[in-house]
Image (cartoon, rainbow, N blue to C red; front, side, top):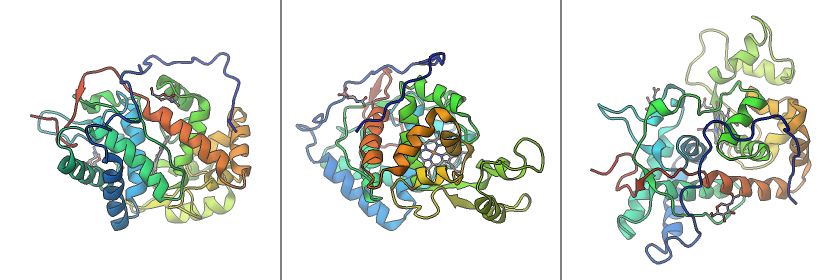
Length: 327
Ligand code: HEM
Ligand SMILES: *[C@@H]1O[C@H](CO)[C@@H](O)[C@H](O)[C@H]1NC(C)=O
Ligand SMILES: CC(=O)N[C@H]1CO[C@H](CO)[C@@H](O)[C@@H]1O
């Protein structure tokens, strides 16, 4: 079954920067040059994920953040140098976990041993994002391939391109539509928050100063509010504290995320707004009430493919190492 949403007469459909479907992607892009690339990446990412349970959420988030700036071109994987502050070092990037970068770099290394100079880091990240969803109990899909690695990665290009934890629906939708993604994609892809964690600073405003100092977000479930206040005290908390998006199953890919939204247990304002705003509430309710996960899983796959299709037509190549441009 497909989810549909008809609305948005007045909303601007494509923001200022519309992504172009630059690269021609296909499922058999490497069938002559590196036929086993999928298996090599799966094996490598499985080994990394077995060492650390945060590898899965880190990689899923990396894939999203890569798409946000210049499309899926592995620009997020570049490390800063003395003369270039890279995309990943933009201040609001600071919680992208090192574990994700390391796992992708190892997968790239394993792929290079089998097929040197052929497979882009952007494609490895797209394959790895699929793999970690599967390892977490989510759906599988065939990944379109053929992306190029970008030649630019700059923190200066990030401003305004990352959705904020306190964004409202209109702001979130504007950003997604500038990538060519629909409001349904927004609801489905936000379901990625069924795994992983957030730092306290991303939602403290909901606890202690929502509309005025001392007030909290009235849509927040009172029990969750109390426990979040304990984990994230107004003053003197440990800035490295993280809280699970889906506290019942933070490592399991399931539709609990949407059920949480129905009971005011979304962690970020940007999560809860998907239920609070009546524009998207119906879709949230459908996804939450599908007893087997099929409605969520089938449609999540379509939206992940759409996210992976976000590419630019800027020049690119195949990097030797994902964190550095070729010499
Ligand atoms: C809709 C707008 C979105 C907003 C405002 C948003 C915001 C955030 C924030 C603030 C965090 C916590 C960062 C931290 O403090 O460590 C986070 C984590 C995460 N995000 Fe999103 N996100 C959005 C959409 C997405 C999408 C589309 C995906 C993937 C398809 C995604 C995947 C993740 C994952 C997996 C984590 C957990 C990372 C970890 O535990 O290391 N997010 N997001
Ligand atoms: C993604 O791109 C592929 C290849 O161009 C195309 O066949 C597919 O329909 C696209 N899917 C979505 C959801 O955008
Ligand atoms: C400015 C800043 O905090 N940059 C951080 C971005 O993320 C990486 C990976 O965790 C950190 O190493 C940077 O310090």
